[in-house]
Length: 292
Image (cartoon, rainbow, N blue to C red; front, side, top):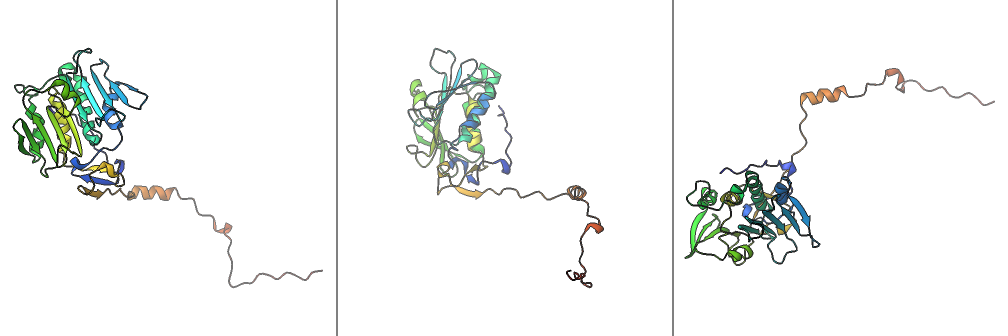
């Protein structure tokens, strides 16, 4: 399924003074608004608690997002979907507090698109026998960009970025549904770093997370384009391991011939010669007469 497209900002609109690459070694921007925007644009309800945590709920109450800077752990973003309001979530996704905000925004943008299509889209569990819901589709963007398969454990399939510093893991077999929603022991585990035990950032998704939502994230993570960051905000990238390229702001536009003609036409008219005081270097002013 084709993912919804978003317009790329011009360099003049970028929020940063350097480009960070590879993008999977960037970190959070520290601003949650971009991740919330796709859902708020659909009229989802927003409320806050006394600790400044933010909660966004779909009109049918079946999808809920929590932005939890004051949560109990490092799970900054938690998104759950429900088939029954009084039952446990059908699926759940978590992005931790270091995860690049752009990856969260890719997910919420795809979620907003799925929500507009209805429950058959945003509650559609993966199905290997279905053309649009095969879990393998979530891996395709990574394969297309040179990520390589690995088998770190007997029940885990992994695919790693070319530099080996980003990994998507898929765990086979039975998993505890509650643990999938509250821990990193989920069906899908995406992380950056040299070790899963101490990742730069991570994201998890439970077994029944719709494939198009997962694909939106893997498409964004593997995009070769760099991400803008502020050099001074060293929390927003892995210092010493990323390439930082200065963002060159565009200079003033070169005036066109029409601009020149308009500027000339707006110049004030020259003063008439008679009104301009002049001094002669060949004549001397008359001396005043004697006092009487």
